[in-house]
Length: 328
Ligand code: ATP
Image (spheres, protein in one colour):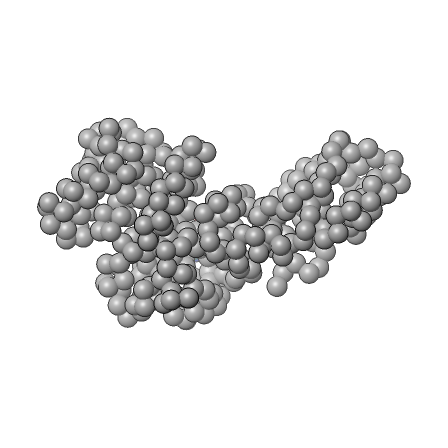
């Protein structure tokens, strides 16, 4: 790799007794999307806050474009943009006024900030609403404006902390297109997400963190391959059937259970399917569904972290029967 756009080495941070980051190391290649994936509380926001100079680590080293974040926070702020989960725009200004304000704060001359505001409003499909107060905007429009605000000073590296959380599918798809456009023109994007679909669609490289540690890394394809070749999906008609055969199904492969639906991660699909059918037959249980499919990133996440993505830690409705070998 050329000089990485972002370099993180052995980053650690505690808040009192809470270990938020515990020795995280990764590099981000220039003009790519890097996905920092993890459940609630994994340490994603803490990593972004350290990389954007808002928080000092207890240990470790972070660089953006070769600039040491701890030693030169002002220089780093000049080359990065940050957009967060909660749109940080002023509701009582118009979109144009918000962007012009950011331009003033980043010391752009008036003509440059007027031009940047107009260009960004156009790019983010906000021109027709540009002179309306932001408090009349939809969630998706606010999020696009928040992202536009992070781009006023034309940053080379953009940090997006859960950029699409809370957006509807259309808003999410629009933001994805915008992010892809930015990367195509040379911007490096580091985004945190709990959405596997988002990481799968956008990220060239993914690092999965949980409890402040890296538990897996690679491309989406690499991560899926790690899990095994195939997933068997078994749907049962009642809880009693599930209770009866749960332990036996766990001998086929690692299980994840949501309600009466059971997913089994397996390597040899045909043999595992045969074994599953034998278990069902011996217990005289007819499943409502029994299929083989390719693994998704959701399966990977569940297997690695012990709970589903896009939810709080596992509840009774989404429990995982782990059969060793999961955590590294
Ligand atoms: P989320 O998706 O919920 O935002 P996250 O992966 O971004 O989660 P962080 O916000 O980095 O995780 O939090 C990591 C851990 O540190 C969590 O256990 C969190 O409760 C804790 N934490 C974060 N900020 C503070 C703070 N200011 N004081 C104490 N604990 C904190």
